[in-house]
Amino acid sequence: MRNLLLFFLMLMSLKSYAENSNYIGIWGNVHTYHLSRENKVNEENQLLGIQVNRLFFSTFDNSFDQRSYALGWRWLDYKFQFGKLKTLDWSIGLSPGLAYGYGNRFLLSFWNLTPGLIPSAGIEWNVTEQVQLGSEILYIWSEQGGVLMTGITAGWKW
Image 1 (cartoon, rainbow, N blue to C red):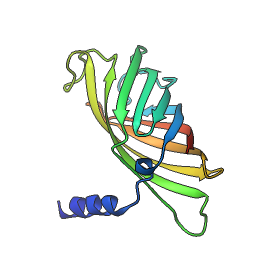
Image 2 (spheres, rainbow, N blue to C red):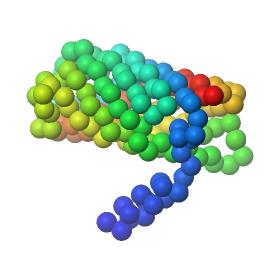
Image 3 (tube, rainbow, N blue to C red):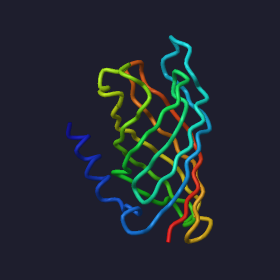
Image 4 (cartoon, one colour):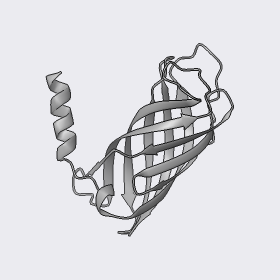
């Protein structure tokens, strides 16, 4: 428990860029990997998302090949740099959200909505002061073990 508290305090000390700038970006899914291999599921979900400041919306074909939608908030979104490469930002984040389209398949589902808390990690190249290109990995928890999802990002801040 003490380690979790120290980790949370470390996160809070990092700089969050999304608070201080206007931002619009897109997120495209590259690959999905379901950690449980018991059932045949859709690994190509064709996710496309948009983020405006901290709010994001996406549409995708879910694990059961049904069109789904997600709405969420980039609650924690910290960027930091290693070494002398000032054009590369590493990021970690945590986003609460709701997905529509899974029905009541999951324990936490209600009224056809499924809540989630999604951790993420990524790397971003600052092409210019306003334009960023990057890659990100997300973990989406499920009762079957969860899903890892990789994607590419492109954003503009002003």
